[in-house]
Length: 285
Length: 285
Image (tube, rainbow over all chains, first blue to last red):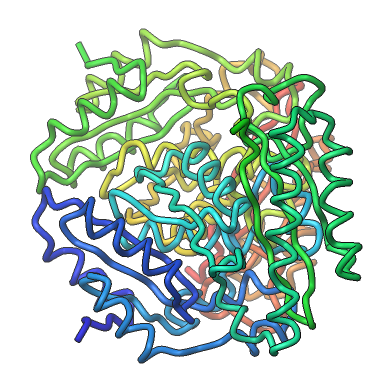
């Protein structure tokens, strides 16, 4: 079975035993692992000499206590999946191992963290970036793997690493989907049958934006209207359905980026009480 | 002469050539070096296999453009002092080498950064902590040396390292003083003869708090009144003259800490147009 590291000291000892030149790949997760996480571990295994995962449901990034408490926790299954995917060890800290009492210094994102998830979940990205930086400092990996499904998070983690000079390469991995397009997410486990049947509406809305873009549409409001039309047909009002510039994660500037395929359609919606999010690159295809 | 590293690439190459087990000591400065900085380099030289200093007047930590532009810059003299003190290399980056265009992620201090310098210089500590974290990521030292003169900064750097798990030991070094008690500071160079004659008032005010404390006074307002009385006799209204708990850098809680000698008198004042700051530990002596 996979080696379970419970404390930062155990992690430090494991890290110190790696050969000096060994490339370490790191896959930080919140557990409740699925094939999306598995693809991150597989990518790390392919590129690195050693592979470490972490499973930590980070209280700092939840603005809703209820959401934190209801977040699925499946440690033994997670460890089996990590082992089967090729991870060498998993860091499973308790909250008290991660945050000392009164810990107060925080990493804050720039303007790209203000809208979308940042607006709907106040403090969420400060919590994400703070724990990601901490884990990167503790594990000191050469490469860290993040899913493209959480596009704004991925953008901000890359910004964190670039702006604060963290010596790690961020490796994005494509979103893994169900046959009907639903992006894999730990939160999918909370969907009942009716919600599960509705959930692919996010992907269909994004596909509508992709189709409009492929047909030559370059007006963000028109692309967004295309997404909202799909939602409306399903009787759903999304949290947001927007187009952003991939280089800034802000609304595209007039005329900028569109022809380079550097736009992205992003959306989030509450389906049967469960918040789901998804995104697709807009590229002329 | 000392090796001058101008870019992060030159720094990275120098860092990569150090022996794997070599302990690196790092002394970050804003230049205009004096015997206070020298003591940091000497301490690093004593404890480490290799010693790196940096000289960077960090625009991000200046709230006043004028103060940034008037900050003394004395590169050749700095390099001579660093060489004479035993540093092996100095990193002298341009602002464009430190901050990429649009860099937006920031490190923010907790409540200990809100008062005193944090209140009087909005954004100052976010600028300090952000550049300190960046330099620590680039240099990856085993130990980093900071002067006790900037007590709030030292507190927040320690908080940064502890809260964000930066793998470095922070080494505080005692304040170096002129014969009349004036703490060495790069800004002292700006004092004219009249201001220089007035400047020891900060030290005298702090000594008054120390004397009261040694005589058994444990009421923070009484200790602060003692400091303000010294200032008033010199016709000066300080920016602040306060007592903080060394463990929190906040106002002491009733009855807490006083007997452990864990309080500190801190002050800042504008003398002839130049802002000076200083502090002394309050210990029963």
